[in-house]
Length: 421
Image: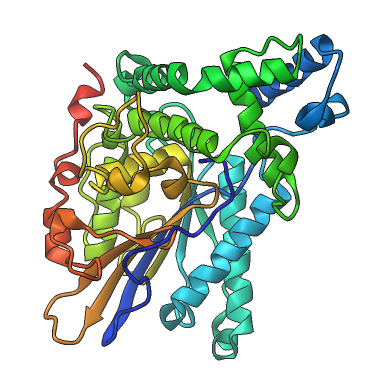
């Protein structure tokens, strides 16, 4: 589930630093921490609960708790648990890249949504705390609190950490309907039995398909509303493990056909960040005419090159587009919308594997004995990607030049020319 707490995805390739290798560069791209539902969603969820209270006269069995349940979730902001997720993420980043972090401070950058900026600040707190706990680094931590470059999400802003500039993608069919169409087709397959069971258990409720999905949504959102991320057994236990797989696929279709390979213009929304990543990997100026902000990217203050550590903070949709632009999930045919294709069979693509709350991707460069060129490795939520698109070896590594050469879609601007047809 995309709105579940962060979790470590099992990796078929060890995520440790290979023998005889030293990390020379690390970039983290992170989603914000766990939050309350968006304003529109929280209104819909409250409406569903009010509908139940208005129409149901008898509560029994696993539904008995709903008689006294009051909807108290907020809107849009990080939960206490979400704040803690990001503190821990900052600690983990320091500990993972201690060889660099004890000497170098990351360049921090965030999209301007309040929860994203707050997540970035929480990450810096965790990084700072880990650095203070490392006695070798205490004498070089005078720069805290670390500055964060914030990029505006206002309409019309060039921002590689937030989509919105590609007009046809945002406003024109089929680009802005592909995801909802795929979800609607899958909803017809999986939701009816669940809807019927809920209505049988809550006589008079007359829950719709969207109400039924809202009831499922309340499992992860009530979970992350707990300060410790305590599993919301009351809502979560209303549904079987099979049904949760079906629900996760519902969310996966939304990302895949909204911002991923299933949308003709989806991956193009990640091209700008892809070119910024290439600039950082090569310490060369950004070459891009898509969503990059030329004013920011041409300044050594707001887009410094030659740094060892970088940390960017964004949203799930934008991370999906970036992963797709970089070709990470292009190894299978389009996901079907009438049957489940689980992540291992879908080139690793799943909403829950890729972009849960506080998800993070690490882009690494390393020098290894016997290699004449630096190697690149990508790790998403602790899962090392095989990087087959650039000839990844058994440890998921490509040479820097091979990685760059594999990003022709990014370097050519994707399909940006179709954004304003």
